[in-house]
Length: 325
Picture 1 (tube, rainbow, N blue to C red):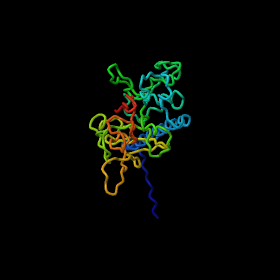
Picture 2 (cartoon, rainbow, N blue to C red):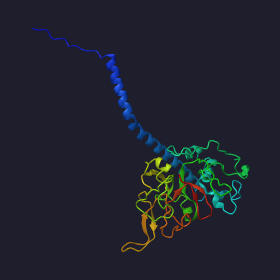
Picture 3 (cartoon, rainbow, N blue to C red):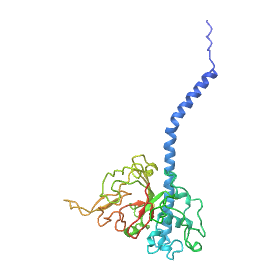
Picture 4 (cartoon, helix red, strand yellow):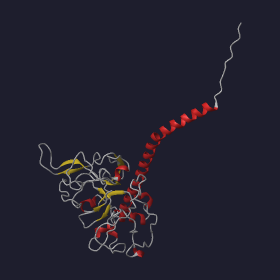
């Protein structure tokens, strides 16, 4: 009987081991960005949604103590202790003053006013010196109701010539303007299709004087196709973002015309079609063909279609000066 042949084994050499490790490092380096980037982006999106939800919850709590109305600074600073407004109290109702009123009262913190996905970090920066008592920028610091140095847009302050002075914003978001008919939307209506607060958006062609459309082309240039807002959650050519509605739910929208958000369109009577008929509503366009809505570019007092912008000022009770980037 012949002996069973011995099984020979060969040890792995150090060189072979190093080669295997090097190959694994190369494979991980290739796969890691593809794995981590969506996870990181998803994490920013979720944190951003939570911040927006936190701010809208603060709005709701405020409304529960103020006749169902969200904060309207001009309603409280009637003696001009915080800001002098002359003959136009609506000038106080800017994004910065609205959020600053919430911060001053402890409803939110300055930190959650900056989106974790903010793309325009040169113009949108956290306010680390918020003055919760005796704010220096107030007309009467001892009686002030908020810190006026908290900015909602980089264009909050006007120069002697009436033109905006370049600055920074201390918040990332947009909301509906509490003016005219839209003032009723600036309250806890519990309407699940009323967009009230969320990520700001780009400029679309004929943006403030455009008929309704199912496809909204971006304006060519830095405020449209080159807008920073496209990079917050979307891509270079599409807007995506978190939007809060008046029933306090937050939805991640992949289009500026979310499903279910519509407005009544005026126009010719069509056979079998009632007048007015409902059309898709762009969150960032004040459509001029709304039935009995705003027909003049820049006015916001008659319309009720969704129109979310960071507000830098209100020249009067019918118009707002919004900021776009």
